[in-house]
Amino acid sequence: MYKAQKEALTVAQLREIFTDEDEFLNSIASATTFNEQMALAVEDLQEDEAMAESIALQVKALQERKKRIESRIESRRNGMLQAMKIAGVKKLELPRATLSVATTPQKVIVVDENVLPDKFWNVKRSPDLRAIKEFIDSNGDLAGCALSNGSETLKVRV
Image (tube, rainbow, N blue to C red; front, side):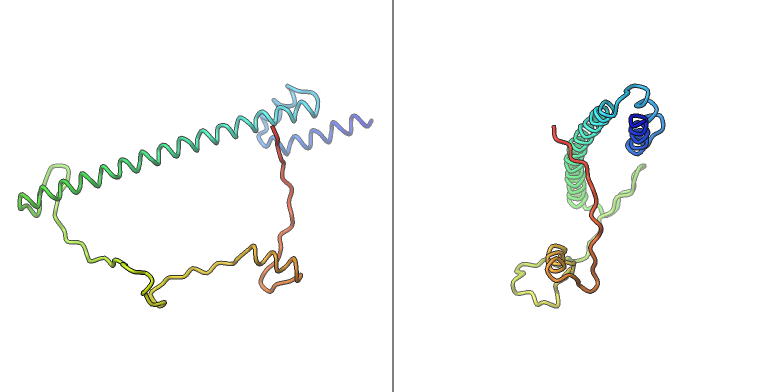
């Protein structure tokens, strides 16, 4: 009787672990004990973590490539602008685009932040969560704040 209850509990737990029905059914069919199920779940977890790391590396490589391409675009635009200025051409109609030399508005350049008056600064206010937590832990309450319920997490050591 105890074993049947333990297996029923295990199935319920597995339903939470494997949210996809096919994955759940495959895991039930391929392993018979809770430990085997958890070992399979660890394998899946490690595969997903490796895939996420690989994707992160690919994203980083693509971001670097994007920066190189954007730099090339900027260089090409500057070269085209210089060529039009040297040729004295303000507007050039081509089959794929119309090019024109345009004047951009002036930009502000801050050369010394130390002498800039306070009214010309943007200041973003945000709560200091660490200080708030320490205050609540010491004093028990702070208006406008509350502590969340703690949660559980799974730690996997390899």
